[in-house]
Image: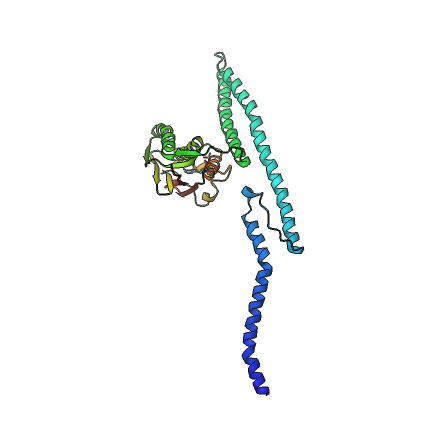
Length: 306
Ligand code: ADP
């Protein structure tokens, strides 16, 4: 009897062990599922979607309290970030008046034929710096509006080839002036839903950078091609390129990759605006670059039916 009992025990022990392991695994997965949900949501929350909140299960336990505490912290963070955004928007707006006043006064003073050369040089510097500051303020205002989502873009069918043609007509003479070859290939009409001036600004930002960061004799190529559901725009240059460790950050606000390499003036806001305009049009903006070889920006737009 003992023998058969022992044999039965030996035979059933592994099966019982497997069943209890499977049961334990299933129960622990079930118990930790809310933690997984909280973790996944917390990971997806960034500065862009600070208004999202963690799921709160009505269980009255530590997990509920943890989710509620995190949500309260997110609410405080959201309000602090909104205050900073509002401050930036207000400051940029308020500074426009005094700045244009300074510029006008300097321009009027420059018209005085009796001004001595030193004063004239000082006034010219003021006009130049005021013009740069005005561009910076305008770009900061654009981004502040982007944060507030106040500029609901006009959504109408826009022909991308017309956008590209217009931006390129501005860039071509500048490229020729700088002794850079400039080639444009635009396919047939490619309709996207969006806003013509914003799209022109997006293409212009990429062309302006290509012009700024390419030394003569170099090449700038613009190519627009359309597939069944997507249109692809490439802006390629043979310029100084971007180092691999700078690439992930060039779309950040105020980020400039080692300015000593290019000696080019800028404020590091252009690509942040370009990215926002691309997102506004559900387009994907990406970059590939190799130092001293060149840079290619690619934008993939979803096409709309006519
Ligand atoms: P800005 O050109 O005013 O500095 P951007 O936001 O337009 O600001 O660009 C951010 C940085 O990305 C630039 O400072 C530059 O280092 C790099 N960059 C952008 N476009 C190019 C390009 N075509 N070639 C090389 N570097 C580029």
